[in-house]
Image (cartoon, rainbow over all chains, first blue to last red; front, side):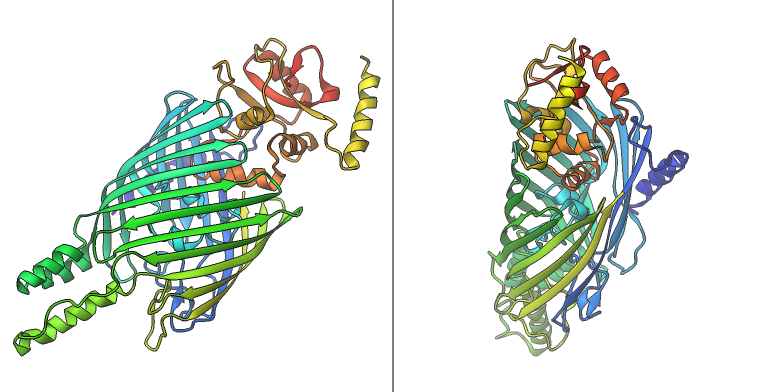
Length: 412
Length: 141
């Protein structure tokens, strides 16, 4: 029922905003309405697995459809209400593929902001979970050079929003603009198979320094994460004596402390840009520890921006485990124990290992609209399906996958 | 300096501009003649208009005022002060607007009204074509 309160807020704001048109920028309006979206298709050369937008969607390009419009396409609308000079509210609604494959709009953010001083603001409600350099606006493809942020890094933390409190402090030191941000809250997410993930006591602290065309950002994040179906699996392990309990303690996903550290930088003097990010996430459970990074850049020739990105993600924790010792178990227990071991190794082996090159071009062919074409070559790590999901029988891990994407991104 | 004189400089500047030399200033950052702000670097001006900074160096909260979207002065201002094309500027504000972190400066398309608003408020900062300057506003260098 996490969506009910935002839904009420949206309804209220939409009714209040109705008399305003797409508010001209001539005066600061009480309400402003704006939006963004992407229409895109992706082709994948791998037909026994899907390339999807995240681990929380069931359908993607490859197996479900050779050419899929469901990976990048989305529509977003946002209403900002400026009630006083200090007090404002933002509701952003996005329609995109959900965990159940449907496109019901959901509240991406819905928060109330109080500007305590020109430098210091606090927000209450649902805000962006700012783990990465572009995580706040990763869904606003128009604001980004590429079709989608490198999944190697951006999938390290698969949730995008946090329900709670958020504080932002800006300061200026000579030509250095400095932004310190902290948030505390919680996030729920549902997997396509119905499993539910909960992040509690979730906090992020980030520091961004901007100097002319340069930006440097460091973020640290912690949360206590529980995933119900995996917890049930490890409760079964606990039936198998000391060894089973030890395995369960190590791999269980019940209220495990997850830590993330991310560093990112960008240099954009106008005619060209380079950017790079590095991140490490440790789930302290069967989901393991991963490190990923990317470097990329582009060059702007009038309305054309060709770009190139190289990205890697690797597993820092074990991707297999001998599991329960079957020798000596009575036959009626050896069978279930072998099943548990297979389940454990199935999850451990799903840790994505891959490297990828993405190259493409952005064409700002008309006001507020950009066309992008992108080619990705993904080399899957030995024995890994990488970030592919919906893996089908007969899939060969460790191969090479080619993606071709075309999108039209817009803002209004 | 007569108006005609400035127009002359403007024409020379424009032709130099067309030849690819952007060193000739056409659009300049201005404040009210009553403002206490004397100098700002280009990046300091850009930071105020891009939402990166809120205050002038002396601590007064700045009120940046844009020209209307699509105006030549606006496009030139952002190109010269922030090295951003209209599309890059739109992308910049998309990042901020769609995360609820801020909103772009108030924009006024009528330059006479714009100049009047800047002149009337010592905290305001804007940009004008050099030919439009008069005693009510002062160029920031």
